Length: 313
Image (cartoon, rainbow, N blue to C red; front, top):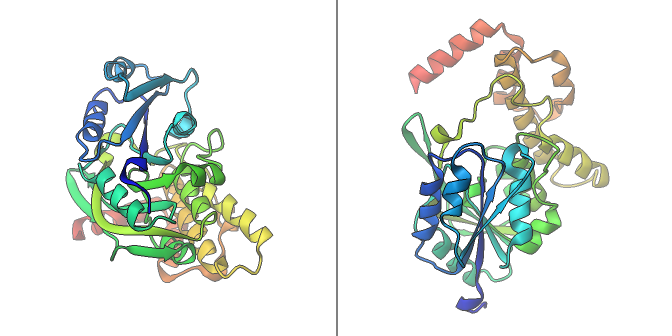
C-alpha cells in the first residue's frame, strides 16, 4: 500500500476567458482537506482578465503557463498541463466549475485502498438553469472496464471534474484529442482510458459540481460535427478486435453519442440523412428509435415535443 506522503496530485485547470468564475475554481482547490498537490493553471489565450487573475495566484505550489494559440475544447491546454505535471496522479477541474473540499482527500483514501487501480471516478452534481441535480454511483468498488463500458453505453458516467487518473494511464491513452475535434474529446478520452486498463474504481462520494450555467455550452450552429469522436475510436477498436465481447456495448455507445449530435444539428438546421449512415441499426434500443423518429420529423414538431417534455418535468 502506498505511503501517505507518496500520494501527490497534479491539478490541471485550463482557462479561457473565465474571469467571472476562475477564482471560485482555484479557491475550491486551495480549500481542499488534502494539501498534497500542485496546481497547474493554463491560460489558453484568454482575451479577458483571466491571465491577470491566475498570475496573481502564482507561488511555489501554483504554476502558470500560457499557450500562444487557442485550442478548441481546452484539450491542448490540458495536455500541456499533464506534460508539466510533477506528480503521479492527475486531477482535472474546469475553470467555471468547482470541487467540494473532500475531492482530493477522498481520492487519496481510495488510492490507498485500491493500490493497483489507475483510475477513480466519483459521483458529482450539476447546476443547470439554477437547478441542482446529482449523478451518484450505486456503490463504491472496483468494476471491470467491460462493465464500465456497458454503463457508459447507457449514460454519461464520467465527467472531467470527477475523474482522478494516473499520469501513466493518461499517457497510454494518448491524452485529449487536441486539434482533432472541438467537442466530445473528453468523452472519447474516457472511452480510450477504459480500453487501456482492466478496471476502475467508482465511488458514491460526491466531490465536484459542474455548473453548466457558467460554461456557455450551447448546441448551436456549427458546434458539433457529423460524427462524435467516440465513433472513430469504436470503429478503430472493432477493426482490430472484431470478436470483442464489448462490441455491442461499444456500438450502443457510439449510437447514443451520434444520435445526440444529430439532434443538435437538427435544431441548428444542419442535419442531413447521410448522418444516419454511421448508426449501427442492429444495436438501436427503443429510446434510440424514438430519437430517430424525431430526426425524421419536421422541426416544429420536435420543438413541441421538447416543450411538453420540459413542462412535464
